[in-house]
Length: 147
Ligand code: FES
Image (cartoon, rainbow, N blue to C red; front, side, top):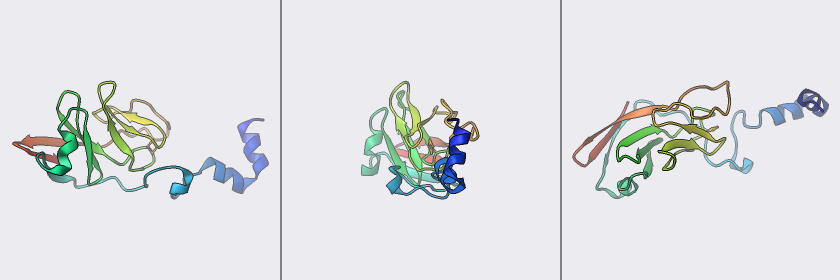
């Protein structure tokens, strides 16, 4: 049976439920971790790299989450920052992965983004947006993350 025929056989309500399972909001009952939130704007904050909150930035490949931003120390030891909110369907599940040179990853549908925010795979051709990347500047032990 073709997909179209299958959906037709289910009826409009059921077809909608199958086709758009997360329209509006997905609950944690769907097995999806995370929440659908707005991408952060006006980002400008600092992190004291000697503070406990920055402990995971001590090693290359480590990352922390702050103000819906993923702040990472990449495999070369440089600080990079990206939106924690995925550009695919706005789940706050983006994390840094310290493999294959280091990349940002959202486990909700498997989107992968390069450190410049470009898509490494495209899970939905209707949403080709790159991941929002923020600037970083290090002065002494203070890391600034900003737009
Ligand atoms: S919301 Fe991140 S991959 Fe779909």
